[in-house]
Image 1 (cartoon, rainbow, N blue to C red):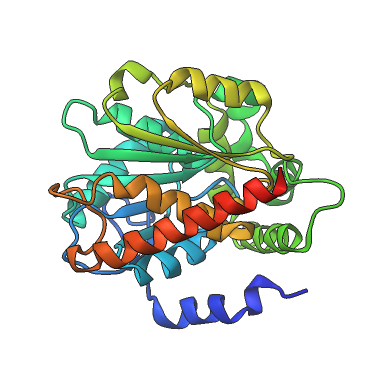
Image 2 (image 1 turned 135 degrees about the horizontal axis):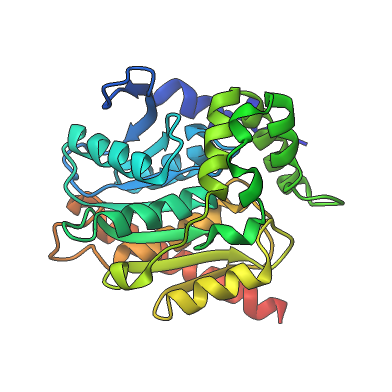
Length: 312
């Protein structure tokens, strides 16, 4: 079994893509950490937002694959914010600092919730051109944790980690999923008490998405059919909220399909982004790379359809 941490891909990523640290708030303890890869001439890149347990590294397979096809990809890690409006304000300042007018957002779990709230918060002068929501939710009440949301800041780190680990898959999983869980546990260990407490607070504070404010944003929903931290009700709620969203289903993948089913997830991301390729300034890909990339997507799409036909 190969651990992700020692895999050639991960080592290649760590040695070739520099981690940047950016401060955009008056409070200089609020540091955004990010990997920005691919052609800097692209003004509407895709930005990845991690789940509670994740850091900017968890999307390394998306960064490697998509930049290889000519996309500009930014994977980031948020500073400590205790309030959704504060997060949205900080993220807007970060985009201003990076001179990005509009972006595509891929959010996993909490990252997906934050992406939706940011799109909603900036709807009067839109900054979000499209959303890909992976194992995400639209209403924090599903976690039944509101009574504790205000006390996370008091809890020691080991208790917070226990709460997060409680949502990880139990029981037997395939080797790739086991590797993904090990990697996420390792990432979780790297977060300090205030990082974890603030993320859990954002995750469980009483809040929900107002879909009428983001009805013009193109949405793809990626979810898994096997065990994940999200209930069926939470998934159904997302489908109701975004009736026109494209749906991308993975038979398996657990909580972290971007790690253990990266080829499928990357294909769905490419299919989502392709609608912005031609004649728009919202393409996340270098124009010179479009035709080669499209051929590859078609081939992958056909072969994955072939696989699912074979399975049936």
